Figure 1 (tube, helix red, strand yellow):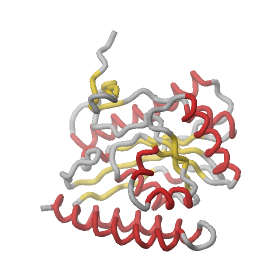
Figure 2: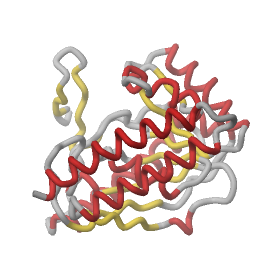
Figure 3: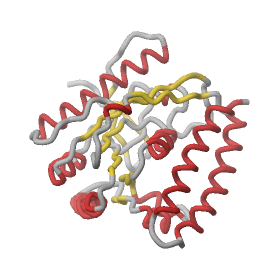
Figure 4: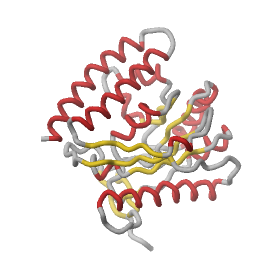
Length: 260
């Protein structure tokens, strides 16, 4: 029943705020549209708690630097984005171009200043990421990116992509890793919701000036280690290392990468 009630609220809020966002996108500036998106995100979190039975405990906000920074987050669920937009002001975000295919959303993304890149990656995606992220940085916005580029089930991890390192290096900004166990309660895009208290946690910022290898290792270690601990906390099971998976573009499925 929790899942059904939340699904009804979720889609009602989507339709209502999509239409509101379209109207806001016609107004000068980005302020009105940003306010709509933040209020929409807060309403979705309220619905998740009231109807889905899932409370989100956000931790580590005192670790966020002043001014501009980059958020490198573990991505478990559609709910992740609601938490970030409801709680981090002046936020831009990196997303795949699949969202532009949703009716009405293309114009909203452009007005928001979203950083839209080719989901398949490659040199052109890297160039687009650099150019669009530079525009967001020039306006002093915080930038949210999911370095794995995929939604993960509990206990899964994808290879961390280096696009976040290039932004970190080019803009000389600290990166705040984020851990989560939200998938234990709302797995990826699944209809089913499991009542409980999820935790999303901002971790200690990674300072500027590191080389690529050290930066990527520190980012992945921070996100994965704490995420595995939070999953263990939610499930009551021992802490386990996440399994590396890859995305099969042809079959549209994930497959496990066996250890060497």
